[in-house]
Amino acid sequence: MLTAMEIPVTAGPWLVLGVVLGLLVPVLAVAVGLLGRSRGADAPPPAPDEPEQDDLPGFLASPPGSVPGPVAPVAAWPPLSSPPAAPPQQAAPGREDRSGLRLLATMAVGALLLIGAAAAVAAVRTPDRPAVGTPTTADDRDPARSSAPARSSDLAADLTFGGVVLERHAVGVTVARPRVRVTTEDGRTTATIELATFNCLRTDAPADPEAAGCTRSVTEVAELSTPQLDARRDGGGVRVSGAFATSRPAAGSAPVATGRVYDVVVTARPRDGESSGGRTPATGVLEVGGERVGSGDDGDDVLVRGG
Image 1 (tube, helix red, strand yellow):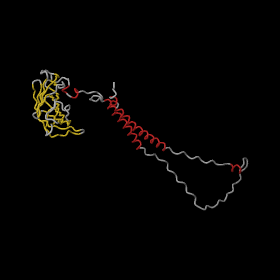
Image 2 (image 1 turned 90 degrees about the vertical axis):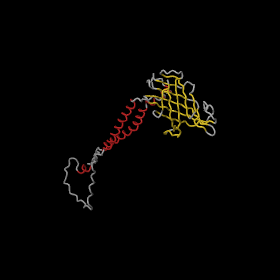
Image 3 (image 1 turned 30 degrees about the vertical axis):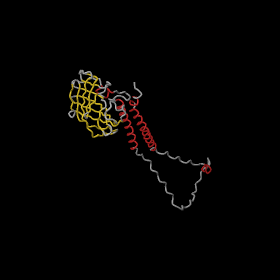
Image 4 (image 1 turned 180 degrees about the vertical axis):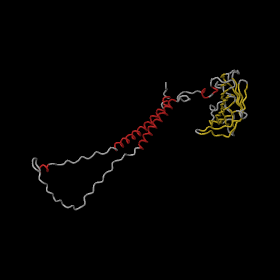
C-alpha cells in the first residue's frame, strides 16, 4: 500500500504526461480545425439565380386569341460611346496548400505517442533506491553498524573518541572530538577521520568540549587508503596509521583543503577481548600530535569481523 510520501513519486510520470497532453491536445485541435476550414474553402460558390422576366407587356400587346401583327423595326438611338467592357471573369478558387497543416498534425500525433511511451517506461521502471519517506538508520549508512555477515577477511570499525588537543595557541587550544571509521574489503583498507573542532580557553582538552563551554568551529574530514595507509591486524582488531590531509566540506561544491596534515594512529579491539567473528562492542585509542585519547564508554563503538 502506498504511503502519503510515496504517492507523489509513483504518480510523477503520469503528472508529466497529463501536462504534456494538456499542451498538445489544443494544438492538435487547432490544426484539425484549420484543416477542416481549408477543405470547406475548396467548394465552388453557388451559381447566382437568373432574374425573372415580366410577361405583362407581351400579354397587353398580343392578347390571347389575337393574331400578332408584324413588328415594325424601331429605330435605335445611335450609340454615343463604346459598349461597356465585359466584367472580368473570376478565376476559379484553387486548392490551398495544406501540406503545412498536415505536417503540424503529424508532428502533434507523433509527440503524443513518444510522450506516452516515455511515461509508460518511467512508470514501469522501479528505482533501486528506497522510496521517499522510508526511514534510514545508521546501519544503512555505515557498514560497521550493519549486522550483515561479512567474509572472513573483511573488517569494519566505527569509533568516537573524547576531546584531544590539535593545536595550542597563546591563549587557549583547538580541540577535536574525532570519529574514525575503518573498513577492510577485498584486501583494501580505508580509514575515514572526521574532526569536529572547538576553540577552548584552557590548556587541556575536555572530554566533552561542547559541554565544557568551548566554541564550535569547523569540521575537518580526511580519508586514506592502502598502500598510503598502514593497516595491520592487531589480535581480533585492527591498527591503522598514516598522514591524513584534511579538507573542509563546502555546501554545493567540492571540499576545500585546509592545508593541515595530521599523523594519526588508531587502534580498535573488541571490548571484551574476544576475536570471534560478527558484530561486537569495541574500544580503541587514538594518537595525534603527541596527544592520546581513548574511545567513549557509551557502547556505540562497534567492530564487525567476518566469521
